Length: 251
Ligand code: 4H3
Image (cartoon, rainbow, N blue to C red; front, side, top):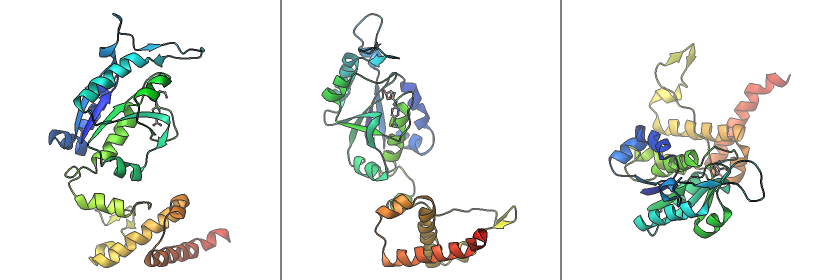
């Protein structure tokens, strides 16, 4: 998978050189190429921003250097989809990641300052995405979040292909709790089932824990999901046990 990145601060993306994404870059499973709008500025001062028409605080990124940078990136990969990251975009999630990961080439435009000239968005941007309802100083971190989530879908990037599949099977549910050694930590032990070696029982425990956690913490996700008969049984068990264990608290 190829990512073309248009950014005034390409060095921000260096942290993707660590860990799983770093290995993916080394193994050429994902590739990043950069274009700096400053290199496409049209005056000797390399100006890329100017005052907003109508007044107000801060600066706005000019359309022309951004258009020239996008044009250069598109020359490398003419078929690429051009994505702009902003709080006004469609909310990115795991389902969107799975879908976008089907594309081989994506260009990310990372804005700075108060944003970019609206006419550049209308003229050159195919899709506008947001990673959540908060404001960042630049689009770079948002682009990195999307790149990281997308990279996990590229075959070979995540060592254990099962974990990506499991995550996608369990889409719409929170993950079950995980434990590792030691067996006892500060007097707290690991659930017996997980030490039993009964894989079927372990899967059942984990699915029940996922359903229970989602019910407790993200009822909005559960409302969207169609549960199988077995899932309904497990969630009912969880809820009954939960009410049993917490009944005294309301006495
Ligand atoms: C994306 C970008 C939040 C998100 C962003 C998000 C700076 C966009 C500037 C940059 C504009 C002002 N903030 N939630 N910030 O995905 O270029 O919005």
